Structures are given as structure tokens and as C-alpha cells.
Amino acid sequence: MKTMIVGGAGFVGSHLSEALLAAGHDVTVVDNLLTGRESNIRQLLGDANFCFVRRDAITPITASEIAEWGEGIERIYYLASPASPDDYFAWPVETLLVNSAGVYNFLQLAERNHARFLLTSTSEAYGDPLVHPQPETYWGNVNPVGPRSCYDEGKRFAESMTMAFVRNRTVDGRIVRIFNTYARA
Ligand SMILES: NC(=O)c1ccc[n+]([C@@H]2O[C@H](COP(=O)([O-])OP(=O)(O)OC[C@H]3O[C@@H](n4cnc5c(N)ncnc54)[C@H](O)[C@@H]3O)[C@@H](O)[C@H]2O)c1
View (cartoon, rainbow, N blue to C red):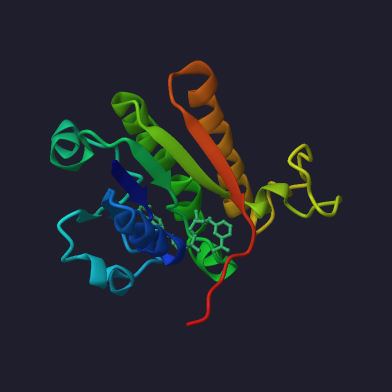
């Protein structure tokens, strides 16, 4: 299967790339290396089934780019976003844009290709929750003007945009809200 991981040079994305390649899939990573590192995917660069496109997700995708790396994609995993507080405090505008314009660009690519789209959202979508643990029916307690709002509201917008493409367009979209994920170095 032809898969694409937007944000695939990051922590989660590089491991997902390895797992999908090991399962026999083609993997195209799109990443601008804002918070990711090429060293995360260096061991994959020689794999004939792996392709790395260094590019900002925020920029609209052109017809020539679709011909070059966007044709025939069957699954899009959208992971692109600064994820740690230090990163989104440093890059608030970029965080809002990658979770809005970037998500929109790749939902359009998914729609064009009839590809399934998976958004990685976050437990931060609940904001400062008043309910513990949070069931998916809980809508959250989010401060829209606080310093974390670039991430919290960005992800809420991304979820809303994904659901608009599911309900009113033709995309088979999924959302996962990841809670804290870490690994030993
Ligand atoms: N790690 C966690 O605990 C956790 C928890 C909740 C949600 N998530 C979500 O999972 C996803 C991956 O998180 P991670 O921990 O691997 O973060 P990460 O920062 O390691 O990876 C994010 C990747 O997105 C890329 N990126 C950022 N902006 C981009 C842009 N404009 N264009 C292209 N690429 C861009 C970065 O360069 C990086 O490689 C994120 O969407 C994050 O919000 C992670």
C-alpha cells in the first residue's frame, strides 16, 4: 500500500515509518524538519520503498508535486505539528498554521486520491479538563487566548476540519487523540 506520513521525521512519525516499511508498505515522508530531524529517518533513506520530501505542509500542493510524489497515495497519516510545550511556545503561529492550512492541504490530497486520512490529535484538545479521566464525550475546558491555545485550539480546528471533510466531502477520516508518548533514548 502507498502511504504518506506528514511529519514523518519526528519522534512518532519516524517509528511509524519504520513499522509501515517493515509491514511491506511504501512510505513517503513529508516534513520541513521544524522540530524533526533527518537523523531520525537516516537509516530509511536507502530503502527503495521510502521517499523523503522536505517541504512545509502549510504550502498548497501543486499539480506538479502531485505528479512527483502525491499520485496513488492510499493512506495519509497527518502528524505534522510541534508537539512539546517548548516547541509550540517557540512556534505558535507555525503551530496554528500546520494544524489549519496544513491539515486542509492534505485533506484535499486525501479527497483527490480517495485515500484514508488519519489525524493525530492530542489529549490537550480537552484543555484543562474538569473531568478525570476524560471520556470521548467530554468536550473540554479550553482557554482560547492562553499561551497553550496555539496547540489546543490548533488541534481542535484540525479535528473540526477533518470531520467537515468526513461529513460534507468524501474523505474517510479518522482521529486519534494521543496522550503522552515517550521513549528511552
Ligand atoms: N509525543 C506525544 O506525546 C504526543 C501526544 C499527543 C499528540 N501528539 C501528536 O503526535 C504528532 C507527532 O508528535 P511527535 O511527538 O512525533 O512530535 P515531533 O515534533 O517529534 O514531530 C512532529 C513532526 O512534524 C514536523 N512538522 C512540524 N511542522 C511542520 C510543517 N509545517 N510542515 C511539515 N512538517 C512539519 C516536524 O518537523 C516533526 O518532524 C503531533 O501531531 C503531536 O501533536 C504527540
